[in-house]
Amino acid sequence: MSGPSQWRRRQQRLSLTGEICPQCSARLFPPRDVCPHCGGPARIPYALGGRGTVYSFSRIMSAPEGYEAGAPYYVALVALDEGPLVTAQLTDVDPEAVSIGMPVEMVTRLMKRDGDRGLIDYSFKFRPVLERMAG
Amino acid sequence: MAVMRPTLEVGIIGYGAYVPRYRLPASEVNRIWHDGEDAEPITEKAVPGPDEDTVTMSIEAARNALARAAVDPADLGAVWVGSESHPYAVKPTSAIVAEAIGAVPLALGADWQFACKAGTEALQAAVALVGSGMGRYALAIGMDTAQGRPGDALEYTAAAGGAGYIVGAGDESVALLEGSSSRISDMPDFWRRPGAPYPEHAGRFTGDPAYFEHVEAASWGLMQALGYGASDLDYAVFHQPNRRFPQRAALDLGFTREQIAPGMLVDRIGNAYAGSSLLGLSAVLDVARPGQRILHVSFGSGAGSDAFVWHVTERITARRDAAPRTEDYVRRRKEIDYATYARYRGKLQR
Image (cartoon, rainbow over all chains, first blue to last red; front, side, top):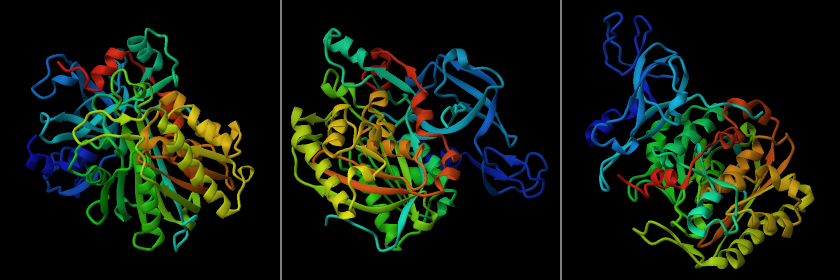
């Protein structure tokens, strides 16, 4: 990802910030400035909570350029609690543990490094919801 | 100065831990480099996943601290990250963390460096910023993905993890600061030159005089200034490079094993460097009762110690479970072998 693109999308990628439609209250991700539900303008930033479930998933064996180091890895469609369906990598998960309907939560992780000298790209991924055992 | 106190009363209003999921048993290092015949300093250490670094781990700890503090991140006057494993040599970790948690644009940001003391140095600065009235809240994080040369004694223990602390006014605090004391001296015990991938260390020199002299003198100085003996304090947390050092420091200072047990994580997660004593403190805050007092002492090579006495308030009970406890992260473990460790840490590349 180029520097300008990384900068433009920093809030979307670091903190899963989308938009909320002032007409119909739909939550949008990624931000697109026009509500796909009612067609009205929607430019109010909205930080999504980051909780959702796996809607579908695929295992990536042959990764695109720049992502080879992490392969094999999972990409999922995550249905966020607020409604949007988001495409993202899964992380901190064992192959046998991934399933449709699995509850997940957003974490900010390293996506790729641009060689030894370029920028490091960080973005949202999803992991199985952390078990709370103590207490 | 034997004891430092800010002008205004301050304390910890929120804290958050982070430990990555993967564990490398010491027996794996022993198997690869010593035919399994070496003495193992700990049971296992925490290893970051291939998509984790000091930035991503600091972001999660910061989110946990914010969840407990329940304040608007825009009110943070500073975001400071202490580490010896910042992902960039030049480009601040703190600005990426601040952006991710919504603390931009009106804030101070900087990356601190003082070996394993970088996190508590940032905490001292946060106390000073809030305690002088320059900022309403300040976030200080100590976080590391420590480097250990393959086959070196440090490879057993060089681990990953840390914690973040939001400092605010005394009347909002879960733990009030009663006072602190800091010491430094020029010490050739452990260092890493620019561009070198792994640190060098001076063997046993790292214990005496480096660790014990700074940790014990900072502790004595603060305890005497505040009028406390070991029995007046409920818990003690020390920097944990291995099992032996903090245990000896505790005994030298008159503390019992029971007083240090809740904050002793090194056997199960290793030495999280700048995150080590801050993770120990978060583990203690997870179980401490209102009215209890905690001695918390860091150590960083080069060398120095920051010592604090924290007085737990009644707010701890309501805030504690607003975020995962330290133990939740410690118990979340996926054991890996040396080959997977070598891949995850970038020692093997396709």
